[in-house]
Image 1 (cartoon, rainbow, N blue to C red):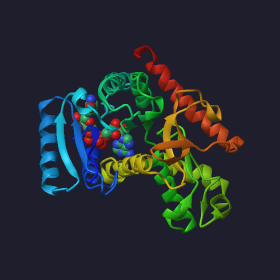
Image 2: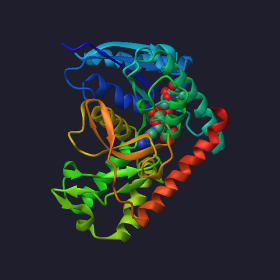
Image 3: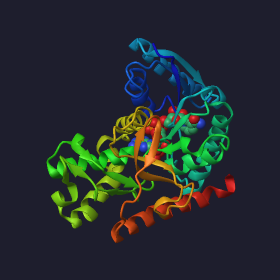
Image 4: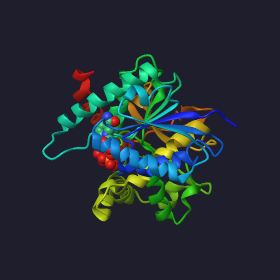
Length: 327
Ligand code: NDP
């Protein structure tokens, strides 16, 4: 049988953590033949550590055959020690009266420390996924704080936006969500993201031709996908933790095990493609194979798309400028 791999999860006692850990331990992320050791980080605070203990009791009670160990900790150097995968979920939520700059600063501190810890102790091949918001900028900060690790190891989650877009398109066209190919989401994990179905197909047919309605695209589809998180909070009274956890599983599974030629969306550090400046963590279409992602290059960007891409890029650059003095 395979040697266990080490999976670090931060914010492990939070809502997303609760929807995530059980699926990782059951083999849904890395395969039903891959044992895992969970290395779970929570803030050192007594209440958070106690809540984490409770989650671990439930993990024990699931008797997952693939769960080869669980390490709870308040120390990033312990959580990331030899980690093969790191899911950075914990982040500072916006509190009452908190300005955007304060939020950026609080998270910059967390992700600087975590980037440094990854740099020091994680596997040199660690695959890092940032879920905690502002996810793209947090991933950028962690990457910049880990100079000895390859830049390409740092990614942010755009997969939830991708899955939301796929689901809206399936409903609009009366097709099965699993049959939709070549969909992508450009940019920031925020309402400025640009979900782009111009290249998408379903059952070999062009989604754009099937829909054939630019007003629906601009005035219904994009706002629906962009504001979906808020709509779920409004309906459920709680945030979209289960679908966020599901997207994290999808992102890591495809990165580790391959997407079989299918396009998926990942937030990855730009190398300058599509006019996105180097190092900006940007949602791009990728395919994945043998543990590596590969950007889909050479797509045509029309005027409408360029405007949307410029807008989400500007937001990311403003966020980057807001943390520059902290790096
Ligand atoms: P959640 O588990 O619900 O959310 C965690 C993070 O994921 C937030 O930044 C949240 O952003 C983000 N997120 C991204 N996409 C989504 C989505 N679709 N739906 C919901 N959230 C999304 O938060 P909890 O407060 O329940 O748990 C966070 C845990 O992290 C706590 O247990 C806390 O103790 C811990 N923590 C750990 C830190 C550390 O490791 N140093 C630092 C801070 C907290 P958004 O805020 O925009 O919803």
